[in-house]
Length: 588
Ligand code: ASP
Image 1 (cartoon, protein in one colour):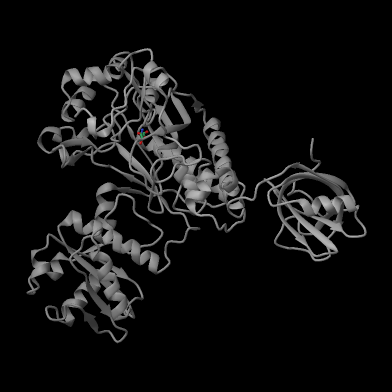
Image 2 (cartoon, helix red, strand yellow):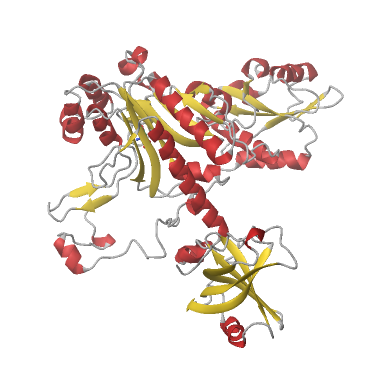
């Protein structure tokens, strides 16, 4: 071994040991008589010491020839530091060198390898292997490793099998665009990369592997955002002979186990909230329950007082920002500007200040007297010192707008503490969702999700009202995962495809393999998939998943380090019998 210890290992109990360390030069301080080198590896940093007059002159010369990120090997004696550094695990000791050799030189890195680097995003992506040397990224990958190990441990302990499913498959209809791979052997035909192993895990249930899981890469060709990557990892699971609550309880167990073992946080049992309630109370199917401020509908106390905007609105709804009656004109104007931003789209915002003296001051005093406003305040459980913020309009739109305002107030009042975790299950999602573009219903989850038995009768008359046996795991306003109890009956699956606008032939062509399997003893089954990258980022207290993935893509879906996607040469194209046409010549 080129080392006896790592750079994060040595403590006082190692004093007077002869040790050998290898690593990267983080920093050199040359104070004339004394030279210190900070030596870094994956485990930490250890300080090396050379003394003019004491140390061998050739070592001093080698030390003076070093640059940042040189790879060196150092040998010496562990001694107690004169000035200790309590912020460093190895801060009590340093190594008095007796040998020093350069294992490899390094060019000066294009950005500093420090916790707060001077490198911009793109540069760091281009030299990702240097970025990964930085402690924050190392910690992220360490957390990721821990979570994957603990996930496997937990699922293994309750008899789940990890089974790999193929990456070269046929399209899975999860609603996103597929990445496709041309086939050389089957001319003119393509594989698709899986958006998820959905149909395979269902086939595994038919095969009798009644508890399956896989930490698996999934691929979706969508526009990117901070919490999205074209390839990402899921904890994908499926169980047979279960009902919805069995799946929820099993994965609630996983969630609580992970919080306990990885963060030492005790999570109480997870509340279940229906989709309908989540929309009504929070305007979102992924409510952030770290804080209250739930919606209160005010139609009955606001109508018919001469305020046309409220009179004409389908929904008048507000939130109570506790203790915010002291908000200044400027702060209120800013909130109004916030809800009026085109991304949010509200026309305006009404406020009511509940003054300390029991009086009210509102932006609609012209229409509502003190008694009227007192009725609002009572409905909203407001007390002196609170501020009511009210929006109105078309119900669906206004709920979305108020959700944004609620989250903004949560931010302003620092109620969204990244160290606090509030998970919940959102259940009873609608089965179908109307799509304006294609003017037809789409499966809200995916076409294999079962409708609630009691709602099947509505499929023809009120398809939008049919509820599904579908659920999401939401933590702190982030959708961490989702799943459903599946259809396991061929006829019901056929009916579902019909409602999704497939002809019998289309359904048979695309999903014949699954419907055929349902004729060979398919057990009742259901499952879930958790977004692993998002889960890790959440545990790491960050919104963006990018720095929890070793080699992510940038916003344009490019890997700027290996420069991909890229053109392929003619020989490869010929072999695949593909021809690249310039966009202008593209066949429409
Ligand atoms: N396949 C689904 C997804 O990727 C999850 C599931 O239904 O288990 O979202």
